[in-house]
Length: 207
Ligand SMILES: C[S@@+](CC[C@H](N)C(=O)[O-])C[C@H]1O[C@@H](n2cnc3c(N)ncnc32)[C@H](O)[C@@H]1O
Image (cartoon, rainbow, N blue to C red; front, side, top):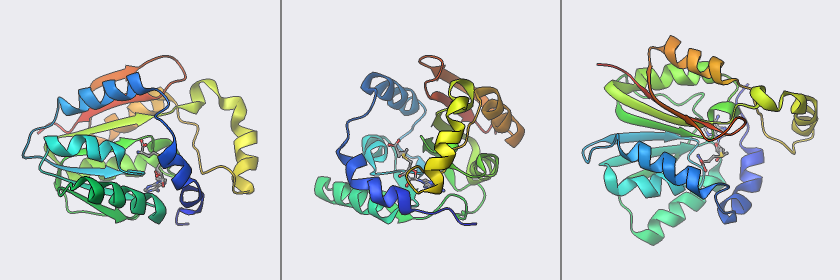
């Protein structure tokens, strides 16, 4: 079954207007990611939301191709880059589940706050590995609800049934690490501010 953009379309305007939940952690992740960039790099981002992360990174790379399943998120992101006169980001409405690109297309891939929202994060990770060039990097930040909030499962399931909550998987950190390694990645950087917070991982496809 194709994932639905409905929930994310509905919340897009509110999402765009909300401040980042933890600015210090967000800035740290941006800074670490930037440390892997070179000006000639081609970057792919999936689940880009309203484009904030792509906009911050755009001056440090050659081009960013950013996709999101929700047309309203992409509209807002496009409006932001148009207003700022940014020319090196291309947005596209697409689901990572069905998106494809030739092997070795990108130097870096970003997946911020998205892997836990996918029906099959293992497949997405394997796809990212294939789309990366040898030596390429995959930076992700993922909430692993399976560690601390597993008891929320029935509540979220009910919320999903009535359309108030998006698809959310109860990932665990070890399972996420194993998925990356199984795909072929080497984990180069890992940071989690505290138990229960998103785990930030930069994984490398060694050349
Ligand atoms: C929690 S938001 C994160 C947005 C952005 N990456 C950020 O860090 O602010 C998740 C985003 O992923 C998008 N999304 C959800 N499922 C997706 C899928 N299967 N493929 C692509 N985008 C998806 C949603 O529309 C939403 O914009």
